[in-house]
Image (tube, rainbow over all chains, first blue to last red; front, side, top):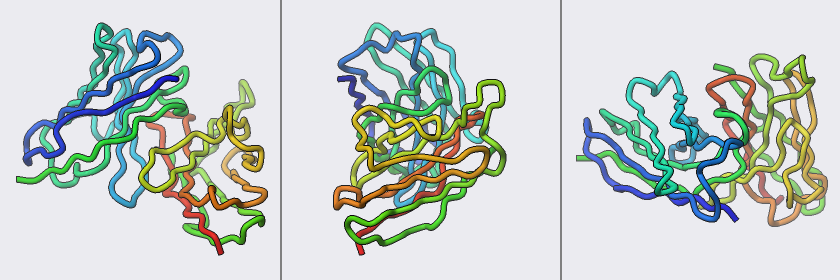
Length: 121
Length: 113
C-alpha cells in the first residue's frame, strides 16, 4: 500500500525559505498515471492547493503562490520536495503531500499524515 | 478561481438518520465532451488527513461504505450519508478539479445529535 511521509523543519524564521520533503513508500514515484502535490491547511480551516510535480519534472503551481514556490522530484530517492520562499506568519500551517490521479490538479487518492510548520523568529 | 461553497457549515444528526451536505460551485464543473462532473468529496477526521470518498461526483472510492453517496451535476452537488454512524463524525470537503487551481469548499462538520 502506497504511503507518503512529510519531513522537514517544524520552525522557520520569517523571510527565510521553508523546505519540506515527501518520501513515497510502497510504490514508485515514476508513474505516468500520477502527479505528486502539496496542499496546506491552516489550523481549523480549509484546504489550499500549492502545486504538483510529475516524475518527469514538469511542475504546476497555484497562481497565488507561484512566485514563491518550487516543487521538485528526485526519482532516485522516490521523493519530491517543496520550497516556499520569503515566508511570513501567514505560511504557518499544516502541510500535506499527496498523490493526484492522472492529472496534475485532479482528485487526490493518497495523502501524507501532514506536518506542521511554524513561521516565527 | 472556482469558488466552492458548502452548506451548512455544520449539522447534527441522530445515529441512523440521514445526513445531507451541499456543495455549490461558482461555475459549472461539468465537462460537456465526456459528460463528467469534476467534483470529489473527502472526509477528514480530527488529527487525520482527508480521505477520498467519491470522485466524478458520484463514483465511490474503493473501500468506502455504500452509505456514502454523491450526486448532482453542473454547479450543485450533494453528499449523502444514508444512515449516520458514530465513525462518520468528521469534516467533509468538496473539491473541484475542472480547472486549475483545484479548489475546496470550506468544509461541513458533521456531529451526532
